[in-house]
Picture 1 (cartoon, rainbow, N blue to C red):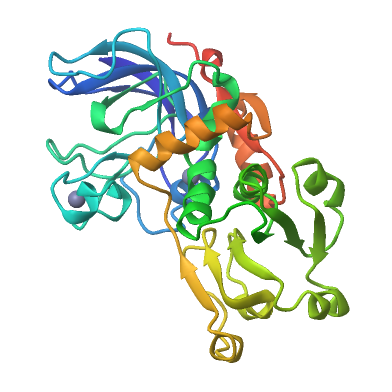
Picture 2: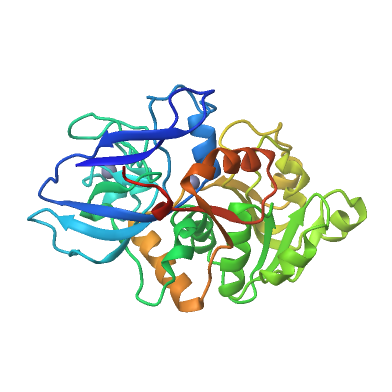
Length: 349
Ligand SMILES: [Zn+2]
Ligand SMILES: [Zn+2]
């Protein structure tokens, strides 16, 4: 199947239109016409080569929403016209213990990311959602709930599940005290989801300049990490901190904010952190942990949760040809919302 997308051809080149082929349908494949694709910070990191060399040309995008265009003969769950989504993974081994209990992101044999990785069967490079079409095996296709606004759903597929999964893993419920470090794409979803679960949410940010945004999303307040007196007063007051800071930083500034047995979960930075101070960990059985996206079943769960609780990311719709400007703005950081590409702006010609 011929399609068109936007690709990077090297680490330092701009994104440009790119004609390429999607594979012919295998028996268990679903072909999807993409309507919207979110712009994740990791798209930018990946095409820039920040996380190592890439198999260019590369079409990024792993927050994909669209409609089923055709299905292979063995597909059971989907039919032409269904509203569907694809997130950060498109395959895994399907037979290890992690795959069996629905945590394909931790597949013992390595999951297949939506873009920039070899396909498990034919070894061609997977290409992501900045394109008109995608072909994915049905086990990795999600269902968009009937009452969900498709135009706003895309960021749930990465930013949503990345923050929902640790909130569930650490049993956040009514009255849980949750801190969220950073109020960007991930952070703003963490605030909304934790609030919808009934938690008391505090945004932890360098200054309190985003207080109004944070409160509008459901936070009860903002804690300025540069205010030493406020940080001291907030000691031992959180059950869980979701740390979305996407750069090297010092988590030991935040661990004293955890109560005894509290956990700080890193979901933003993939790489080095500042040297870890053990004192707050030892004197309080506090933990520093990490978490990667979520399994397919849990991704369906967060879509359903968002539909049920009317939780939506704050989206700024862009045209496909605005992607280079969007990357520039993303690189400068501090956007409390997500860019979403309206794929109807990409002409097939
Ligand atoms: Zn992402
Ligand atoms: Zn597996």
